[in-house]
Length: 541
Ligand code: C2E
Ligand code: CA
Ligand code: CA
Image (cartoon, rainbow, N blue to C red; front, top):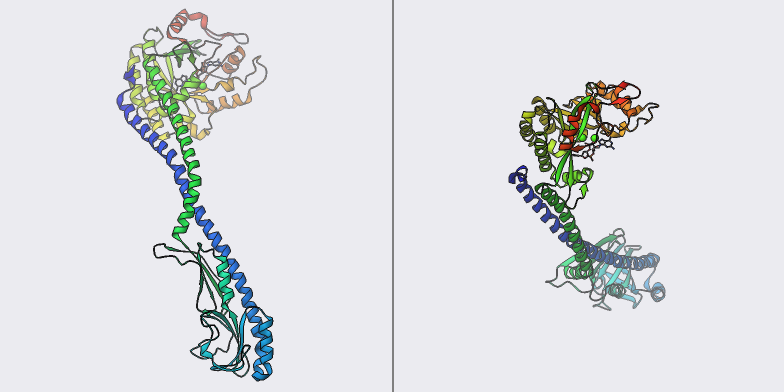
């Protein structure tokens, strides 16, 4: 039987299946691992950035508070530039003592400090504090300097305001407040923070990234408007990020490995069951476990059996029979349907040699979608027709609307060519598909086979109409097709269908599917198979 299942139809397919199975297993194993690596990486990065952003916001808010305080005090001192230092020195000292953050408060005229909250009247070159190439600005200014004459090693934040007659106010905020703030925010091992306020130098805190450890800008934000803008930068290191990543990965990896294992196992099982379905079917073909039953088809006009539908049966070892409703879909899914149909054709060719039927007797075979749209169909059917030639049997292909839509081009070409060779085409399960009238008109077919479900809508006692069935029959007549009804079980159903011009009837009322030899005996017994019904009297000869 293996002859219907040649090496050249299976081997490339098997190879393809093995390749696909391999890819599936590798994906099942690798995907969870890749996902955990990616997830832990993005999570670590997000976490680092969130931490940095939080730190930056704390710094920015604190600095903004100190700056606002300095600006307020500087503004309040502007009127003091209107009086000599002796008159305002005490006031200056009191303000410095009363307000937090200030190292000193200065009154300045071009080139020199003339009054200070620390010294009272003074004459210190302004350049000891701060230098402007074009002289003191006549607009508010803010600058961080690296030191002041009193504490040259300690940075300070200077806030300047123009006063009267070219004089100015300079409030000197102790930079230690800012450094302490930065120091409190950055744990020693964490990032480096850089702070710029106005123009001037940058304050830094934390550990600077070493040369071997790539610096990584985690956060950079500039707020406020010139001249008092605040710029906070948080710099981490690639090493620290990698460390956070590795920590997450260590926690995630066991789950990923577990998931990969489960996925591999599930994929393997599903592949195995798919393969074993295929192997079982192929083995059953080899072992000769399939046989064909033939269900007679009744010609309404002639009143005789005018054909049979070939229906596959699977008798498994141990006497268990598997329903075609079960194994045909399995054969389709595991892509054994083509070899299985070839096997069926061989069985039908063998069985029918023993029959003594009229020339032109129909033998209908069901053809699945994959076969219908394959380039092998014509060759397979030609071989079949040749084997039946001695018997002058008429081959009928039963195809569904659905299978005609899948790969329509090849299916149409196949059917057109086969009809030219005398094969008749029957649309099976007609009415259950969703083809429009115009689409149906374009299909190459000869017969429409009304689905059992519609026949069942006929009242068993013969009362009332079956409107949906009527619509299906009306549609078939409009297409000019001959009609065959399947699943006819009662005389009432038969009468109903006959009255509406159905040409052929198939169903338990007339005959059940039977083995080839049983059919030959049944057929030979002849006349008693004519269908007689109550309402119409004799319907057959
Ligand atoms: P189908 O092509 O619609 O076949 C008709 C089914 O209706 C057959 O079931 C037949 O036994 C059943 N039947 C016939 N008369 C009556 C009746 O009066 N009442 C009831 N209730 N049922 C009736 P079966 O043999 O179990 O086949 C089921 C399906 O399996 C078929 O439906 C067909 O789609 C598929 N099948 C069977 N053999 C083959 C085959 O060789 N190739 C392919 N591709 N499919 C097949
Ligand atoms: Ca059928
Ligand atoms: Ca059917």
